[in-house]
Amino acid sequence: MRFPPLNEQMDLIKRGIVELLPEEEMAKKIERSIKEDKPLIIKQGFDPTAPDIHLGHTVGIRKLKHFQDLGHQVVVIIGDYTAMVGDPSGKNSTRPRLTHEQVMEHARTYQKQFFKILDKKKTIVRFNGEWFAQMNFVQIMELASKFTVARMLERDDFAKRYANQQPISIHEFFYPLMQGYDSVMIHADVEIGATEQKFNLVIGRDIQREYGQEPQVILTLPVLEGLDGKQRMSKSIGNYIGIDEDPKEMYGKTMSIPDHLIYRYFELLTDVDRKTLNEIKTKLADPKTNPRDVKMDLAFTLVRMYHGREAAEYAASEFKKVFVKKDIPDEMPEVVLKQQSIRLDDLLLASKTAASKSEARRLITGGGVSIDGEKITDPFYMVTLKSDQVLKVGKRKFVKIKIS
Image (tube, rainbow, N blue to C red):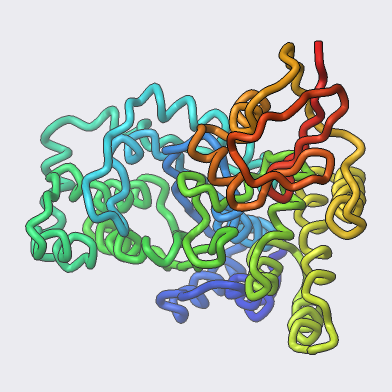
C-alpha cells in the first residue's frame, strides 16, 4: 500500500497529543515503514473495569483511528488479566480486584463500542489472557526479574504511598510489567496512553529491550476534563458523556460543559480539520461571539458522529425548544401513579428522577424542581396529582404524570 509522506503522518499523529517520545525514533519508524511498505503496529490497552465507554476514552481510540487512516495496523489489547490487578496509576490506595467474569462482561460492551470509531476490518483485538493464562511460575519470575523495586518506587503514586506508610500490594508492581509484556507479545512499534500512563509506557520500552526487541515509541494524550470542567471525565463521579447515551442526553450534557472546554472538545473529540479548528479558536476569542452558538455546533457534531444526522437534528430542535424557547419537549417518559396526592420528594423517587430521598430534597431545596412550570422548593409539599402534569427536575429531566 502507499503511505502518506512523513510530514503528513507526523502532522496528524501529533494533533492533540502531550508528548511523543522519542520523536526522532517515531520519524525513523515511519520512514522505514514507507520504504519497506510495511505498516507499524500501534497498540493501546483497555482494562474493562466498567461497562461503558465515555468520551474521555475516545481520545485514545480516535488517535488509533488516525494511525489507521494513515495505513498502520492497530492492535487493541483488552486487559482481561491486567484489569484483575488494577492499574495503580494515580491511585492512593490499592484497588479492589475484579473477578474474571466481571471483566469479560464489561469487555463485551467495550468491543461493540470500539467500532463506533475504529474500522473493525482493520483492527486486531487481543486479550492479554491469551499469554498470561499460559505462563508458568518460572516465566512469571523471569518477568519479575526484569525490574527493580527501587525503580518501581520512582513512580510518583508509589513513592507517595510509601512515604506516607500507605499499603502497596506486591501484585500492583506487576501491572506495569504486564503492560510492558503485552508490547513484547505483539511487537508494538508505538503505544498510546494517557499522561498518567507515562511510567507504564516507558517500562514497556525497557521490557521490550530485555526481550531483544526494538523499543516502542510512546505517545501520551491529555486527560479529558468532564462536565464540571475540572476533574477527569469519569462515570463514578457522574461528570461524563457516554457514547451510547440517548442523543438528547448527549446533546444536553455537551451544552452544559464550561465554555473554556469548547475548543478542547472540538480538537480531541471530533474530526474537524486544522483550518476549522483555527476558525473556532478565532470565534471564541471574539467578544461578539456567544459561546453557546459554538457549543451548539459541538453538541450537534458529537451526536451526529455517534447517532447520525437525523438524531442530531432532532436533539438540536428539542434543546432549542426547551432551553432557548423555554418550551417542553414533544416526547418524555411517563410515570403512572394511583394516588391522588403525594409528597414532592416521594414523587421524585416514584418518577425515578432522583436516586434517593436525600438527592430529591437537595434538588428541590436548590430550586431545581417544578410542576407545570411552577417552581417548588419545599420537599414536603403535598402535590395534588392530575394526568398530564409535567414534572421537571434539573435542566434536562422531564416526566409526564399519568393517573391510573
